[in-house]
Each structure stands twice: as structure tokens, then as C-alpha cells.
Image (cartoon, rainbow, N blue to C red; front, side, top):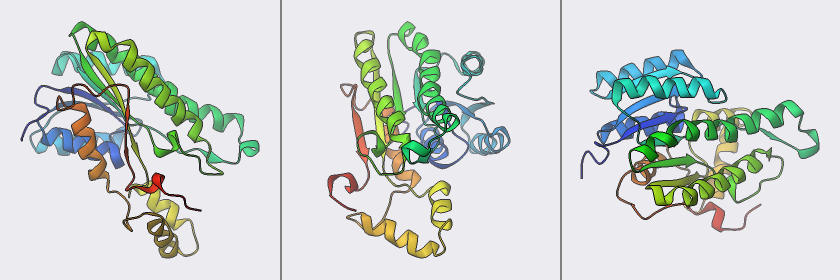
Length: 258
């Protein structure tokens, strides 16, 4: 099946790199029209132009999702160029890991501002469009941190638990208006952030090998594998999937491990 998203006009956040960029590429390949936003305007502009050069219908705007006015402005501008948006992929996020009592107020605020408030700002900006059109889809990129806890990663799991709660709440609230709201929970993914984490150790290859050993299949996901799932969940192929979360972690969260 090709062009599964040809009727979709999708806002993708955090689209300049990593999972967000992989999702943008996969959506364009399936015929979607995209509004891409990211705080890294320079990198975003480059990647958006690459997608356009490949034939994608893409507009982009530097925006900080913590600023509701910036998000609303980007959505209005994109609606003029692409037509009213009918889907949202809330991908932008940030890792904030610490021991609970060592967490500063600034770290706490940053974590919840980006991972939760920012996601809500985007939902708030597109929901009226979706309701007015009689339906649409929202996909929140959560994490296995939304239902499992790793010590010393506070307060990130709190924000992701809350994001999952928001997914369920909005999914039930607007189901009768034709709006589906779901979440996708990746585990370890081979993004630059993970590579940087490995490189923070004195022996990066050993750190990488230890991560791989945690997984039943001996490897972690690629961004492209997460993008494939996102395409499915934002498409019309799962019309009765709502207020739920799909886990993609190779089975990691199903086993006990140190």
C-alpha cells in the first residue's frame, strides 16, 4: 500500500533530528503534507529543504513548543499554505535525569515544560481544527518511562506518565467528535542522544554492548522503525484504536533485568 497518508496534513514537532526527522521522512514518503517545527531553526530549515527537494509538500517554522503563541502562529501559517491540519505527532521532548533529591527546580520546570506543557500546547493548537473537520488523529511520542521506572532518571518518568494520562484523557474526551488520541512508547533508540550517552563513558563500546545485552534480541531500535509505527498509528488503518499506547522496545520492558 502506498500513499497511506495522502489525505493527512500533519504537524510534527522536534522534527530537525532523531525520531522526529525519521517520522517526517516516513510521512512524506506516504504522501502526507507536513508542518515541521523545532527550536533548532537552522537544522530544521536544512532538513525541510531536503524533504522539499525530494518532492515533499512541507512547510517549516522555528518554534518553541513551550510558547503556546509560537505554536498557534505556526499552525495558522501552515493552514494557509497546506490547508487545515488534521493530525499531530507530538515528538519533541528532552531527557532530564537526576536523583530525586538532587533535582533542581530549574530541571523540574524544564522537564515538565517541554515534555508535558509543550505537548499540551500543540494539542490545544490543533484540536479545534480537528473538531471542526469532524475528526483527526493525535499521536504523542511517550516512552517506556511512562510505565517503568529506572533509578536516577527523575523527573522524566513523571512527565511521561503524565503524558500518557493526557493521551487517555483527551482520547476519551473527544472520541465522539471523531478525534483519536494515542501514544507510542519507544524504548532505547539509536539516536544521537543515545550515542552521546555511550560516548560519556570511558569505554563507549562497552557501554553500547551493555545496552544491547539488556534486549532480548540483542539490539535496539532504529529511528526508522519507530517512524514506521508512527505512520500506522496516525493513518486511517487503525480507526478504532484510541486512548491507548503502543510499546516498541523489543520486549525489554517485559523482562526483569538489573
